[in-house]
Image 1: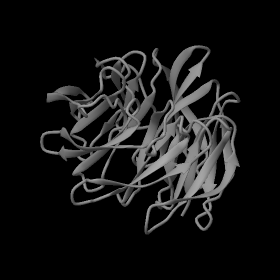
Image 2 (image 1 turned 180 degrees about the vertical axis):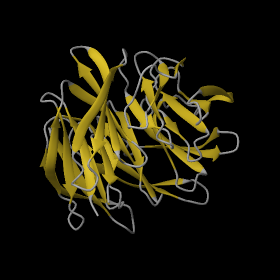
Image 3 (image 1 turned 90 degrees about the horizontal axis):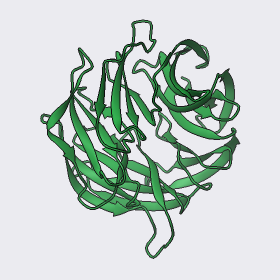
Image 4 (image 1 turned 60 degrees about the vertical axis):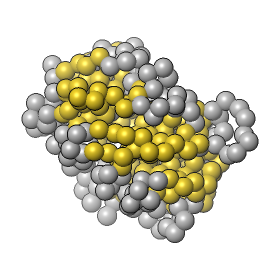
Length: 338
């Protein structure tokens, strides 16, 4: 069994492959793939045979496709690349692995590109859908029938789309948006493994919102919003990424400003959240991932390293572990390859 962390390193630029020591959570550098430009968002195919990276090459925005050497350490071999014009702030594949979905902050849109049987993202794209300024994330649900695009700042909504897995086409849901109500600014989101709930973090609200999810209608309804900050703390802060443990027991969100991870316990029956604690990190934590075993959290800030935490199996609390010097990290994701 090989659990890995892929880290997009800007400045050099490269994709670094780290193996996770299952006993200690320590990261060991296994391989690197040199890039032609600075990497941003990363995504993997559902079968973990391919990785996709947004790359800025001389002010051109490209998507590069890589084959993952699953049975020989998780190394990466570039197998394709296309110019996509705009800069995606988030990428994901649909659950069939036939389509790559992108969200675009500056352009206020979502796109769908086809993925060939060879694992390479191709042109022409299937679709461009204009949404609203500052789209920040895109994901299909477990059934692959619906897709969701959170928007921060003034829009303050999650766009809801029907998704056709045969064609890759997005269509507006009869209820086209879901709002947390107060101006939280939903930035990223994740679904509970039971499919009944979702959770988003509020960039402007410094918050996490729990949503009930109607999987038949593809509709989110807000249930609860809690602050990610300690009582009485004053200062500038914004949330970045949010991730849920594989068992659905805990969810963690990054605080940029307070420089911490806020952890919440999840009631699997009701979706209700309860604060576990707020745990100090390096300054300005943004890229975040939870390892496939659900035992470790990795998060990067502005200190050119990946911070690591052990997750307490009983409480969900975080204990700091030795960090790993990486260079400036723009994105991280983890995977179990064998």
